[in-house]
Length: 379
Ligand SMILES: *Cc1c(COP(=O)(O)O)cnc(C)c1O
Image (cartoon, rainbow, N blue to C red):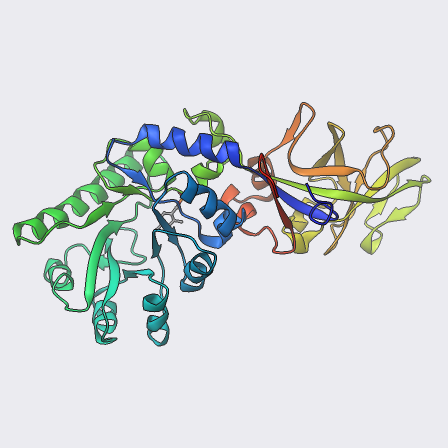
């Protein structure tokens, strides 16, 4: 581990855990269904290039991202295989799809016309809206969908839909999901009835794979589960795959100091020492993606296997913790913000719970200022 990367604040990736999750997820799916990892938003904060390289080496041949520029970053770093852009690309940038051999989602019929009108062949997957009402051509517009297969400049490699309630197996949600699945296969059958060759099909994301593993698809677009989590801590705990978190976040102790009872620390005189105590200043802050709402004791970090509560307001680049009970802590020591220290652990799900969001948001907001260190590998 080079000091340059672990000098201030960094993300540590455990690539063995990535492989473990990958193999576990593959094991859930039917034999000819492959993972199409979702590595959008910088691979949910993990570093898209590092994760994609590792997955390429595990024989992953298809990825999905949210944006054109995410796809371009992967290509510029030598990532191989199909890269599907799930979201909107502006027509002025269609040439970049071709230049970088990226595959674009057809968002609806108008978008199909625009893509076709670009005048050069573009590889696409057709998005079908079966009830989320976000992107995709409405599944009832069969004529439009059939037409998309006939545009001369569209090379249709795939067709997919997205489930919007597959995270719950309670009755109304399971019914909605099953209806979405039926609607999708209705479109598939209508296409086949026209003698059109069926392209690659995909429906599930992480919760879809967990709750509906038996679906007969060519791909599953798995994001959060591959990183070793479900969206909530509760779901991660009850998940029957023993997922392992891939990411940890660590930071250096930049100073240790003693406070006398009645002294203040941090902005706004928010923290007043209730007794004589010892605090550590850490070289990480909210600009690195640590939610500011963990301030004033709502969150903790781990130092030497012990919990150290956050005191005062988290600053942009720094924060302070109470280390009164931690012996021998000194400048340059390492604090764990997310991950394990000794027998203690702070999970992304714990943090998400505290700030009222899901793991996905905590991960994807981790800042670009954090360095990336891959464990189990030479750096
Ligand atoms: C983000 C995304 C996924 C991956 O979702 P996870 O819940 O993280 O597995 C799959 N499909 C689409 C369309 C997405 O936007």
